Length: 196
Image 1 (cartoon, rainbow, N blue to C red):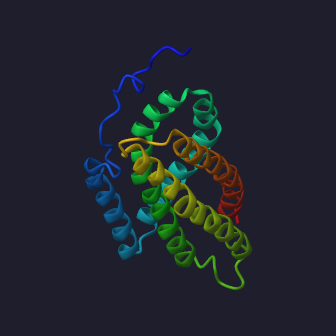
Image 2 (cartoon, rainbow, N blue to C red):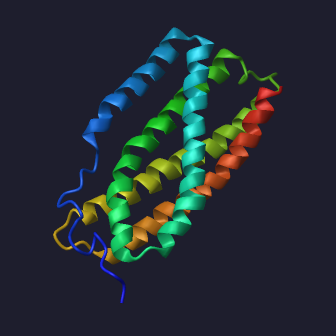
């Protein structure tokens, strides 16, 4: 029999805040910077937002999929629930923000540098990147976020179903791993574009 954990002793919060409101000013600041970067049409703020967002997106996908995922898989259900209660709300805020930062400014950079023009050597690479990143964005916002929110809704119920939580957490972690591997393809493509 496992030793009781904090989660099994009822130390989980009664209600989990699905969207951590304290983080919204930071999100507003970052989205405001993206809007400024696009409106200013200056390369440096566009590049800063794109590289910072892309680096965070790549790092988070790789870390969650390849490091956190295997650890979560070995945790007891109460420990997994306690971890999820603290981890998942942060992901609700972080992932849409870094995806927005990366995609919005990346397209602006490609247009500003004329890399999407028919004769550009970078065009085929950027089209490949758009396909890979488009798939990752759909997965992040269409699979990861719904799984994340499902876990949080379930944990807020008076009788959470650990099977649903476990299944959604596995979906979240495996999908993050897949997008992490796709991130490697993006890194190859983007470093190639940077050398053209």
